[in-house]
Length: 366
Image 1: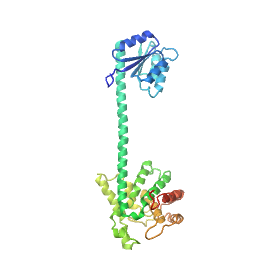
Image 2: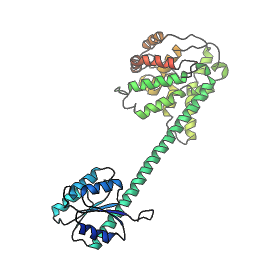
Image 3: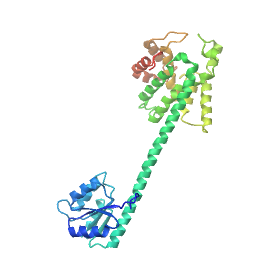
Image 4: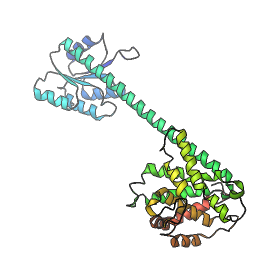
C-alpha cells in the first residue's frame, strides 16, 4: 500500500497475452496492475504515470527488454523505478547483462508465485526506504541553506546596526561608509589572484571584508562631542584622544563577541579593521606602531580606502581634492603609509574609485 492507503502500482511488460494474464491474475488482489505489450508502450505508460515497480520481459519484438531497461534508466524521471526482469532466458550472462543495465532483480520463468511476491515486496520496501532518505536529505539540505541564510542575514543586520550607530555620531562624513565599503570590495576583487593574497581572499572572506568595512570607525561613538564634532582642526591633545577610537572600536566588537559567548566570530575582520586601519606600512602609524606584514591585511585595504576618501571629500577644515591630486599622494605614500601591493591595485582600478566617489557623492542617496 502507498502511504495514502492506495495499492502500489506494478507495470507488467510482456508481448505474450498468456503471460500478461497469468502475472496480472497473481498480482491484482495485492497491487494495482498496468500492462504494456512492448517496450515502446512501456516507456509511454511509465512516463504518463510512473509506476512503483516494473516487471519486464526480455524477448520482445522491435525493442527488447534490455533496450527498454536502458531507456528507463536514462530518463531522470524514471531511473529510480525498480525493474525486475521476468524472462525465460536462464543463462548467467543473460542475468549479468540485465543487472548491469540497472535492473534490481532477475527472475527466470516459469514463475514461482511465492518468489515473485517476495522479490516484489523486498524491492518496493527498499525503494520506499530510498525515497524516504532522499526526501529527508533534500529537506536537511534545504534546512541547512535556510539556516545559513538566517545566520548571514543576522550578521549583516548586526554590522549595519553598529555602523549606523557610528554614522549618527559623525554624520558630517555623509556617504563615507558606503564609499569605503565599495573601495574595499574593488580592491579585494582585484587582489584575489595576487600570489600573496589568493589563499586569504576566498569568496567567503571577501564577503566578510565587505560587510566589516563600515565598522572601521565604530569607536568614534566613544569620542566626546566637543572633539568629534569640532568645526576645525584638532589640537595635539585632542588628536591624541581622537586616536583612541581605534582601540575603543576594537574593544566594542570584542564585547559584542563575548555577548555571543565566543572569542572569534565573523567579526574578526571588523576587529582588525577598527584597530589597525591607521597603522602605516613604515611603522609610523597608530595605535600599536605596526609595520609591513604585521598590519592585518583587511586594515591595509582600509588604510588606502579611508585616506583616499578623506582626500577627495570636503571637511570643515579643508576643501575636497581632485582625484589626480589624491592619486599623486597615494603613489608618493607607497611603501610609507601603504602596502605597495595595495597601491598597485589602486592604480589598476582607480577609475572604479572615481565612479564610486561620484555615485555615492555626499548629499546623494546612492
